Image (cartoon, rainbow, N blue to C red; front, side, top):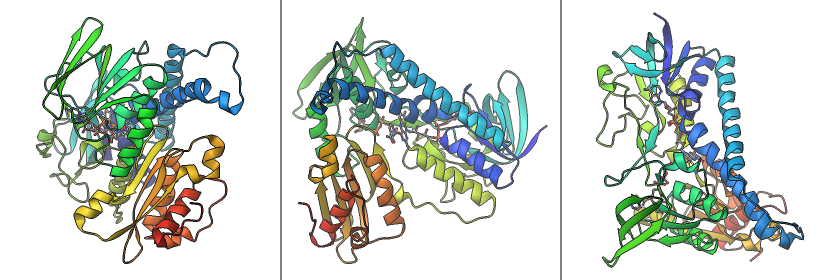
Length: 466
Ligand code: FAD
Ligand code: NAI
């Protein structure tokens, strides 16, 4: 029987990164994955394919809506070839997952293809083309998550679909109903809106992206409405049925009135649930909580001391970079180091255009915690760079402690917000004050100047360009 220092179950961004770090630290490492390709949700049916379609559809939108203003004239029709767009996405996914094969080989990680299940706390059965049992001193569970569903919805995966199917549709929907105004609903809703679909987002809460800063939800709603997405907030969906090529959805609005929607596709995007099926966690004595998550302590250790769990299958944000940080942390703990993750500094990004990015506390959280804060805000439209590219929607909002000036939260809506947020994370990691940020030189003309200006506004209300 083959023996390893560490076995990682699941090859998503949590699992494969954990395996690399374990190998870097000199541990004999194995990785088991039940799917044919490595990379998990993120690379195969998540981050990478969704960003690929967001980029393609953005190019199309630019061509049909914005080129003219830039003085670029196109003779003849601009058309979408969806099959080709989806094929490009598949090629990007393939390249990226192959990159993980390369990294496994480079780091001499033994990769097993098959479903991993615990026999006991140190033995794992791998059911692939053949059955193998291996022995592992330590195991890291990184089995990820699957789309959640509502109890009364039967997903047929043709017309009533999850994000996985939405990434490979064969036609552009005429009317896409989206249940859930969260990250998936907005990103994929925007893709199909740009390609010509009517998109209706039906959201239970009274605002989209309910966990983000209220000002962000408001601005994003305004911009996406302008782009043609329709929002039905405070609507409780009660029934979704397929009727041939149509899907009928019934919801109850705030006033208690029943409202009906009819579309040709319905995307269910109401969150994701931890995935542990087939793992036989109980055979090892690993506890799973009532939310289906593997229970872990602050060191990501499960109820069994030599078994750890990371990523979407444990508590916390379901984000690729959070899973990666946890993978590194467990590897370093196993090597006797003392790593630490500041969960408050894990940024959150929505890759719509304009992008949305945030780190730290929202204004609502600071109010709830009774923290005295200052709010410095700067609109993108006041930037020369934003006007040059005609990306004038959005703002940077910096929340700083009223007494110490320490930056407590940064919330951005705007072009390239996903990249801009890295500056905020760096500043907050080093516990910078708004004044620190405001005194740093930011190249001109850039979107990053909005960070400096918002910091000036937060310091003592002295933004220069507004
Ligand atoms: P996963 O990536 O889910 O990987 C788990 C792996 O474990 C899977 O490959 C699974 O097959 C395997 N597995 C499960 N059980 C077993 C078993 N018993 N034996 C062997 N293998 C097993 N996050 C971001 O940060 N940025 C984004 O832009 C982003 N976009 C997204 C877009 C979409 C449409 C979706 C659905 C998600 C997106 N996410 C994004 C979330 C991100 O994909 C997840 O947070 C991330 O993949 C979690 O990583 P993980 O390693 O915990 O699990
Ligand atoms: P989500 O949690 O972001 O949003 C779900 C939305 O559905 C919420 O607004 C919620 O209020 C709403 N909702 C829940 N039940 C409902 C109901 N019965 N009727 C109507 N609305 C209802 O989940 P989503 O969008 O499915 O994404 C899943 C996870 O994937 C997220 O947690 C996110 O972390 C991750 N992800 C991250 C991305 C990124 O980082 N850019 C992109 C896509 C996904």
